[in-house]
Length: 146
Image 1 (cartoon, rainbow, N blue to C red):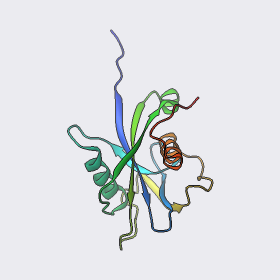
Image 2: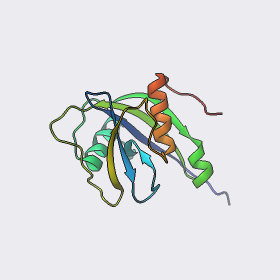
Image 3: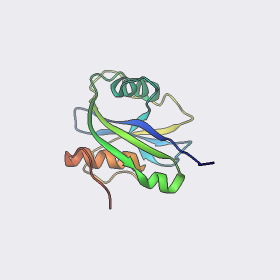
Image 4: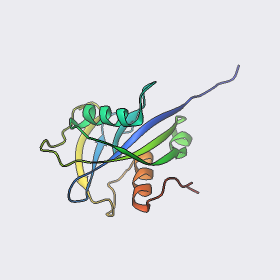
């Protein structure tokens, strides 16, 4: 009998503010203590945009509008380390709302931080998040890490 594994599709959302900073969270459960942009798994029948809007509302309590796809990340390092293969749809949304992002799932996230993406990212940093930020800064849709 073969051991068939599925590839999981998720979205990762780079949320920017008016100062050009991006929002990161420090994971407190699975993948702790890694820093990461926010997002999650796409539900069956769900669009990438609907997934991004839902996940951001669930995780940091803010409403984003019109998230756009800018890239794709094949997260092979995580697969090699954990045996879970994910493909991330990398998305961007600007947020200039009146409500400050806040931790909504304390069992999954312990800290929030706005950072300038050209500065050194907080470490350790989750592979899918790092890949998305690198793609966004390079204005590339996809690249293969060697």
